Image (cartoon, rainbow, N blue to C red; front, side, top):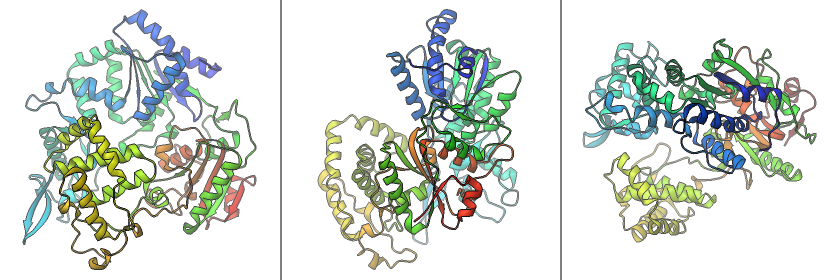
Amino acid sequence: MDFHLTSQREAYINARGKIVLNACPGSGKTTCIIYKLASLEKECLQRHGPYAGIACLSFTNVAKQEMLKKYKAAYAKEFRYPHLVSTIDSFINHYITLPFYNLLNKEFSRPTVVDQASVIDNIFKIWYKVNGKMVEGIIPPLNKHKTKDNRPLYRSYPPSTIWINASGKFTFKGTTPGAANVDEAVFQQYGKEVFQIKTKKGVITSGDSAFLALHLLKTYDRIGKYLVKRFPYLLIDEAQDNSEIQHLIFDKLVAEGLTNIELIGDPYQSLYEWRDAKPELFIKKYTDPSWTGLPLSQNRRSVQRIIDCFSIVRNPVDDAITTIDVKDLEIPIHIYRYAAENRDQVVQDFEKKCSDYNFQNTQVVVRGHNLRDAMLGNTSEVNPWKTYHPSSLLAVRHHFEANETKEAVDSLRKLVLEFQNPEIGYTALQDLQKNRKEDYLFNGKLYSFLYNIPPTSLSFEDWSDASVKALKKEFDVDGTDYFKFKLKMNGFKMADLKNEKVNRYFYRAGTGQSTIPITTIHQVKGSTLNAVLYFLDDSSEGTSVSFKDFKVSVGFPKEKQRLIYVACSRPEQLLALALPVIITEEDITNRFGKSVHIITL
């Protein structure tokens, strides 16, 4: 394994005990972990025997697979039993909550862990008639709870948004609802009933599972002691995104005798506050004298000018990041000044520059899915049908046209199985999808059908009729009811809309014919790229990130500044920023210096 051992890396490799590794972007932290595993494996075997192992946990499945891939590339073997690479959620689910769930509730069988908001909310929905019309509601007793202005509580706080914290208190996505909106006692009772109904129906979220796991560890010491014996070494990557409950779970394992635990991450790259990430707890342990805090501040990815650019949002008192072993092609930071109508020109110019430098690994990055979908054409101004199924079929066609065949087949499989089994529940549908995924004859029919989805050049009415006929011919399902039109839509006359072409409203790309992938900051996190073009928004309202957010931090940076940090720390050689044309050249040079290359198209 080719590994450059610096003093910082050596300090980490040799460290044992309670370790917090604060690793900057491009520091090679995953490579360091892989290198260290070789010595830990031998040590674990010698000290704890052949049935105890190392648990390497990360935040996402992508990071998990990357670690397994790099380990195999380094050592030409799999990282296998008694060792484990897993996500944090999966580790908690499969080693604590699910196997010991019967200790908490003997009345119900082991639950299914589900995190899709729509699935959670559908568990609670009911339909009833009012004046001859079907109206959507929520099951009792949840329907009795009201806000202070007498509106149904579930309208403002759907069941999927009700989280439980470490103390057992219920919150709205991690925050306490305002006293002006709802009485605290009413909200807590509502949350308690949501939690009880979920467990009774055999469905919990990963957040619920973490709470239950913590409760199990506190109530039954032997569970923690068993886990410490099974995994005497615990390495947690991307630990800046751990929630409070996850931190408390690991703290409990330490209390039960775990002596070797490592929290590895970069608090500046914490992007999951919407999932209750608490980067401040990572920072607290980094400076806690009972833990050993170690830095990795040498960047092996980016040239120094890119580092200096994304370091603008860092707190000046933090350790400076320096480049090491990176060849500099002397490409200045590019700043595009754009308007909504010429985003395609910006992308095309960036694409040409990447071609000139023979850059193959490039991305266009945006804040969120709305702008990304607008640039890709993955949006629609209307949805004229009563159900979501026609729009889903259009999405299948779009995946196929974009050469995303696997996504197209997987989405179509789910859709067809819903057509074939209209009364099936969520868990049963998931199981059926898994089983039919191995049905090669069925998969062959799905693939063939991709070529027969009607073209979007048809009118809405003709496309709907053609789709119903195609589904009947290929899968012998009657989709008539699924393709019925709404009786009315605001801003449209339905009789006229039915005669409009589908492609006028669905999948109109907004960036020309660019071949460079367009993605979100969350999706590009962890990547190393040759070049990045990052579009900033024209305002900072809501979740939007704008030029105003690209500033020096006072204290720990806000999440918007951390988004900028992650987006701008991906490229090796070329960082391009796209700013709204209202940002003047003077504003740009005052913020980024005079060496940047400003382009107004």
